[in-house]
Image (cartoon, rainbow, N blue to C red):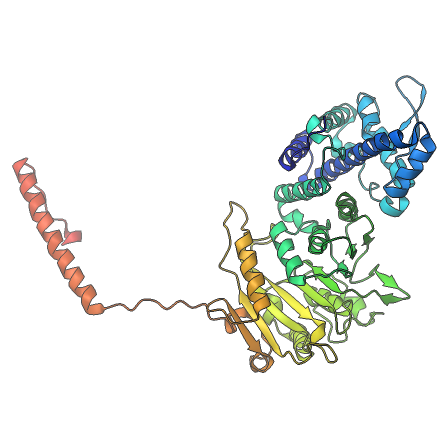
Length: 526
């Protein structure tokens, strides 16, 4: 069969595989098992597809075929295994199909772990550490041996469906990456507030990527990258492959998701570090923070215990404008992002809670410094309930380092404020932005012009007069004037209605009398 598989078919088949764990394992955890198995099935199908292609070209030269596959893509090694059921020593290819044939093994969970460990070891540059945090032999997550074996057997059978045949001849390049993102979105919906650790809503990621406007040749960084969706969207803004992606993620299992996401979207050269961007950033060269053309992020809102005690002696001097409060790390992330953007060139786009726009104290002083340095380019208010982690409305801040002294836009001394908070599509549990909403925001921002009840270009002088408060309603007037009420006309209408009501009551009394029914007047309606 060579018919191309449809995106909807592969999405549905992959999601249905989740039934194996749904209701048994927490959604925030079973996503790891499903996504890792999807990854294995994909690379197994790619290997089989290209192996057949190269076999036609090179004949039975097994070693040459494997070298070619490893050089161009990755390597699936062979593993040695002692079959506990038969006592026989086995050697087989570390792929999905070998596991599927052994799905009834009494130690199938351990066997799956062995296969993933072998794949990691054979592809260290691309996959080292990616599968280590997912234990298919875990009793605490997957149950005791009998239940665990049954669930894993069903999982392997679910992924062996024809709809999940992902050979290159059946699946176009971006389908598997889209499926991965689709599953993460569905998992996030199931996981609720826990989703904040790994997911930014697709529409928000797309908006941030378009606002960042990366160009060919750019280095793009997300210092709190989660599962990597925002990096993928930013890369998709660039035609071709002339870009470099970088990310940092503090959660180990989420970092693994990001690495797989990059691989499945054909971006496996991305450098994703498992680290805390604020206390121990991993994107460092020669003891200095790496610099980037574009920095985008959806960092945790008002993060407590972000590293306050270490900030005063920060070796990278990121907090010279001031140290953010101990219990709110918003400006710590913003400060970091500003400092890793290229001087006089870099762009920063970040999602923040509204408190970042107006809170005083240390945050107010940092905000003032950033505005006085002429970094701030735009403030965009978004609707409430866009995120699974919070129902509050949020904002996007855009900082442009071409505006600083010596940059090509150093004479630009205005900030665009956009109030897009009232335009969204309502959902049962979550609101979203449609393509039309996103397009309006992008068009308005790029035009740099006022738009009635929606956007206002404001001078730095006016912002200074407002004590550097960036609260959007101070600058964008969305007040709708109420229609004037003619009191005389209203009174006349009331008199006419009362007259009509009296006439109706009289007619009703006559009808009731004809029926022999008498009624006492209701004092409440006299």
